[in-house]
Amino acid sequence: MGSSWRWQLSRAMRLALWWCRLCCPQRGGRGGGDKLWTRGRLSELWSYGKVLLKSLYFNSLNNSDTLLDCAFEPVYWIVDNVTRWFGVVFVCLVILLTTSVVAIVYLFVLPTIFSTYPVHWVVWHLCYGHWLLIMVVFHYYKAATTSPGQPPKDKIHIPSVSICKKCITPKPARTHHCSICNMCVLKMDHHCPWLNNCVGHFNHRYFFSFCLYMMLGCIYCSISSRDMFLEAYSAIEVRLDDSSHFQSYYQTPPPAYTFRETTAHKSIVFLWVLTSSVAVALGGLTLWHAVLISRGETSVERHINRKETKRLKEKGKVFRNPYHHGKINNWKLLLGVEKKSHWVTRFLLPSSHLPCGDGIMWDSTVTRRDPMAI
Image (cartoon, rainbow, N blue to C red; front, top):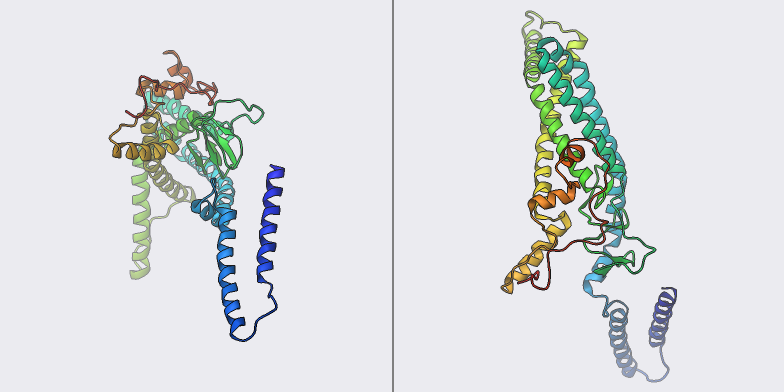
């Protein structure tokens, strides 16, 4: 690499010196001859300048797309660094909002459940609510702190399909480069700003489980606090109407509420609106990732496979995903389920087990008798 860039630098300097040599005026000639010489020299300089640029940027490895990417590199750098910085803000926001929801449930929702619900419903709410809380906290922590995995840099002889142009290292199958994390990620799905981490081979299960249990927790909070939300919203609406009515017509003042009651009403409204909104948004995201998992794809591979499907369809061929092992098997591979008891110990309970495989070697359904394009 060192000799390569030195050679490129010396080559550029030689071309620049030759261009400057062409710019130097030569003696001889007068009047119209000087004008013709100047015009011809400018035309020659312009042609040579174009050849100079093309010789530096257009070769077997570079083209106009590469030149355009280089021109927009500062923009990419700003976007990547802003996203990396905002990742910390998003993580703090998730922790703050989740803590606020849990605090409101403990302060206002659970006391109402204890005082109005039968014993068996109280036990159910305590068990189910705390189970969801444990699963959400566990999987979010693991998804944010677990490395998604990257190709080993000390091993040269690893199965690879290409070379990363930024890392200058072999890229195994299903590996892609993340410009925000500035590294290649094994079985990269996407970079999640809410985790401030990439979703890859070793934390894909944690990410999906967090989305699933967070969605279930938001639905649980919305349903459990629905009646309290209606009462709180009615109380706030009546209080505002009576207050404006009293200020306009000087009639009976609105009913007085204590500070705790006012805080409870506003907190319940905030809880219900927040959890309902998150449940809808996160429900769509969770459903989309469930579809991708059933197909044996990641978000990046979905985009690549769609282009490949379209390209082969124009040739009258059919694209087959080599990493699709059937819907049930795809879920087993993601969740690390090897026997029936693992559905409880590894999916319904917190588990730190590793996923199947090392993220470098992949079992492919494609063989010589079963090609990808048929």
